[in-house]
Image 1 (cartoon, rainbow, N blue to C red):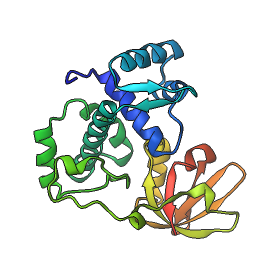
Image 2 (image 1 turned 180 degrees about the vertical axis):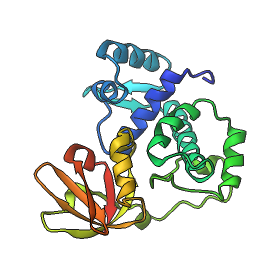
Image 3 (image 1 turned 120 degrees about the vertical axis):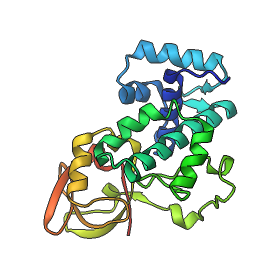
Image 4 (image 1 turned 90 degrees about the vertical axis):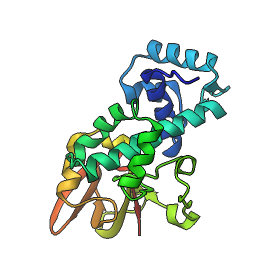
Length: 228
């Protein structure tokens, strides 16, 4: 199936994201993330199931078929390579990158992907610290990172009321949807690889450095992944 429409690709990527974040993929979660109605999501999922891209199990979880996973991986790879180019080459403001990459992911050819890999010196993660999947399909130099390299935990699980230092590792796709929060994180230096101070309040997590903090609501802070 080579003529996937954009809506299908959006759904495939969203299911991939949910799996990546440890959230059971369900139609309700897709409706929340894409801002679509329940009936619209149900109709699209039914079509994808008929096309052999997903399977709805007894618990109403959406499972990617082998064909669906292959396509989802390709879309996410294009998305994150586009993010690398938008940040590193075009210098697009950090908080605007995700939305722009959502457009590029549907039009980028494999030939362009390969050229971008060369231009960007073979990145393996996005500017937000998320691994670029499926690189082994297009990059003969790719070496899969070891298990120790990928161990992270969401910041809510490790911070308490007293400030402590953590290293920002990943900002999941979900939090990238909030341009205001992303802009505030950039302003206080909470970028992947940065060492920051963080502490938890009743309503959120305060993150910052050099005396400047921003509060991220708990429901969004769970999508910030850190290492010690």
